[in-house]
Image 1 (tube, one colour):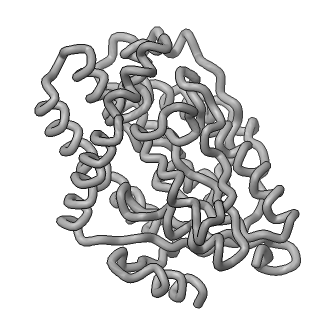
Image 2 (spheres, helix red, strand yellow):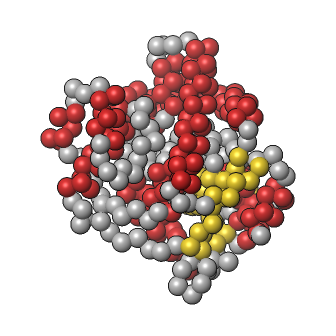
Length: 306
């Protein structure tokens, strides 16, 4: 299953917005087709950040057997893992999996990670540009986004609501603009892309229910533990919506009720942005076969097998 032809290895991609059951489907597919999962989630790379990043380890267990997964729990909290590192780590995993004649299954919802692999973006290891950062220091978030979108071939615009991420995206875009020959070759990969889809109101219900479950399972305590281990509140906000709003609650800036309301709304908006990204991928020529998320798992596997 790992070969499209003699020269081009095959990979199956499972994508979709948050709370659609991507990991469950990927694991079931792995069990059925002798596959291993490569995570395409920009936050699940971090150790100890489990509930806040939506890691569901139990989903990797199929009929009592763990399906092997990669690029989860590979970096320490506080470290800023980037797109270039993901791409390099992906290539290593992909080659390892196909060398053992297994099927690579790319699974996740981080649009820039997915595109960096599926499109074969040619990236370079971009270090911090202190001079550029000083120039951007006094800019508003709106001004930063205008600057970012003025660059061509921008790979990362997923989190335009976070100042640090936007500055980093400008830094990367500026580097490639000044160093067009600095890019590395990316291997050819044959791929089929499947997306999980629910109606908007169903997604909203699933997101809210999942948030309640994660809070009941100790997501606030997870943030408290990370702060106790030395991470600063400003560092935690880098790691996404859950850490941003729960940190505000833990540090007394907002109430629990307000935290839940703001976080729930923000995750709904995030899911909408994810779908916008995937629709844009389709306009760019990616063929995504959408699967009704309400179908039983057996039917979903049947669609993919065909």
